[in-house]
Amino acid sequence: MAPIVLEDVTKVYPDGTTAVRGIDLTVNSGEFMVLVGPSGCGKSTLLRMIAGLEETTSGRILIGDADVTSAAPRDRDVAMVFQNYALYPHMSVRDNLGFSLKVGRTPKAEMRKRVDDVATMLGLNEYLDRKPGQLSGGQRQRVAMGRAIVREPTAYLMDEPLSNLDAKLRVSMRAELTNLHKRLGVTTVYVTHDQVEAMTLGQRVAVIEDGTLQQVAHPQELYRRPANVFVATFIGSPSMNVAQAAVADGMFTFGQFALPITDTQQAALKGRESAIVGLRPEAFNVGGAEHTVEVEVAAVENLGTESHIFFGVDAPPIGVATHHLAEDAPSIVDAGSVFIARLGPDELVAVGQTLTLSVDTRKVYLFDAATGETLLS
Image (cartoon, rainbow, N blue to C red):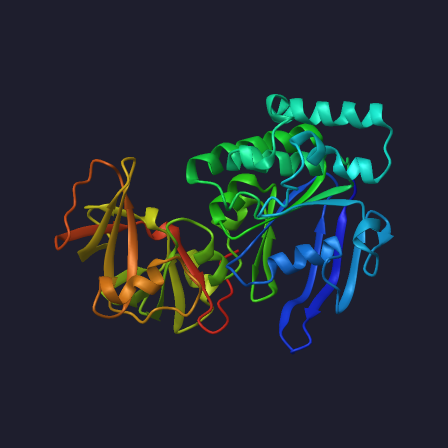
């Protein structure tokens, strides 16, 4: 085990594209760190730089006490698990697991013991003589992880290893990864674009957008105290609802909403005449006597345990990355923003219905209208 330290790490490609911008990040020894962000944000490039598969334009990368910025991949003592498994199709599972040990000229007795131990750990004993083509996707992913584990490296680097699996298998594999990390305790950096995966796996999560580190924190810290509008809207499913609000006479007003400003919020505003207001879907309830708003239901998702209600708000959308509904908004409402309310399973709501929702004003998030940075500590 060893910490991984990134100091002002930048990657610029020959065509001038900047993929990673001055990232400072410390992954503690034995920690499971998740890098999360939308596709193309630079997270996989950063992982490949740690592995030595991409050159670093500037900055330093340290693994343990060693500066490995210019070191070859084989000299970094890390093992990488790829999205596409990268197994040798002509080799058996046993040979795939032991390949790196064979190349490293590990004694045969030790190699067999380590392969057998890892196969037992991952439930692969009965598949040792099969070829990868005879395995399911989940079994092939176990072999790919086993090949990394058997090396006993200083750190594991995982690049979206579960993205090729179906939804049910991803859930079970997340649990297996968590248990594996508890047993092995090896420093792990894990890349994903799936914020649910990030929240369930990471001891800490680093959110990246456009090659820039936005926030590093425990998953619940990211959810409860996002540093800016991007983190607020990226972390959480469904996404946080955001709109630019006018601030006057002790009220936030936007679209059909008029919400009172609490003393804490007033202190944070510091005389601003506008701010970005954020409301998570769970801030809404049906009915209530205070802070209500009437909305017309544009769409409904019934999920069994809860329902998601979509409605239009006559306020221009905030230009931040959100989930799929941002692109679908024009087809749901004629203009403005789409908001989502999360309701209980017993609330029977129909498209086109006018619904009275109450808002818990204690759950209002505030962000600077110009910078998007949080105003509430």
